[in-house]
Image (tube, rainbow, N blue to C red; front, side, top):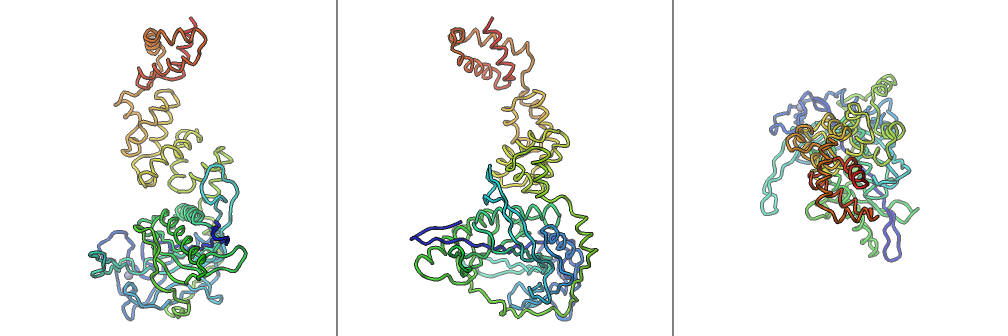
Length: 496
Ligand SMILES: [Zn+2]
């Protein structure tokens, strides 16, 4: 994205740092269970409380999930990597250091140099063609901190509580190259990254539960010039807030540069309610953290057979799925992109097609009415009581002419919200389409008798009168008449 003002054009440069909670049963360096929503401070032990004398033991499953991600993103898994201590004091960090992986050349992080493709238009728009490769600088492992809960009164923090259940939960950090060029591209990247993480079952990817968190480095520069001074934007808790926060920050920096001032390197927090970013602290330099190798943990050795085993165990990735939907099912690029942008949606689609083998029909409903419903409700399809069997049944009802397309649209919301079978809803509401020729012929006769004006108009050659008559049949049957049959019967009877 370029922003233009007072004759100076700037290019937006965005890099993302994404923290992912890994789907392990226990914490990174101790045996405490990982459970979302447990009572505060019930899932703790001397290790994750940072008590003196306790020693960390690495969770192998976390390394495995990190490697799955690395391979899925085309990264090089480092044969040996090392944990480091990142030293700083904060109330949610009982040891006064976080065990993480720093980017030392001699002690590299778990994996480096991968990429993920996103659609070139920067958004999932119809007709969008071409893809962009966004570089992944590194994938590394670390432990989460505790969680501070601030009790506020009249907008001021009165006191703060600390929950150490999250302390030591396995985290993976994915760092992109600064290759995203707009807030929209950043959002699209996150959607597709989340789809990968869900497909390979390393994370739930739920931003609202904090299992996927995104920080962004934002700067502006003249095209082709060196990178400008960046700010780090934090506290973006949904895809929508990522896009809004970055758009705000880009405009803010542009205004600073337009005034001839320079951007300050700092951390800024996104305030969702006020729709602004605000300065929270000047950014520490890496040397402030005094990184050094963690002496209590041996380096992680990843031999080639481990990587090969991980590679062989990966399922079909969203990118391959998207291509298959286009090539095998003949779906439009845009639809295939939408279906594969969530693992739950792709699974739902494929199961529906297995039950009712008409991919285009299933796809139309999923990217049309069902996606509209999900967007409005702010939900994912696996958060609804509806199953692929429900959608397949709806499609069958339409296919065999038992209900009209219009009726199907009427009952889809009820089917999604309550998980009730379409056949039951149709039966209860008396919505079955009238495809019985004799029954419909009687109604057509009635309509012809009641509207002699349009009938003579039609017979005088003004064929548009037919549309009116079809409308009358639909009205009389409360939309239940099979439209093609009504049309044919009317024509036949008008000719005679
Ligand atoms: Zn513990």
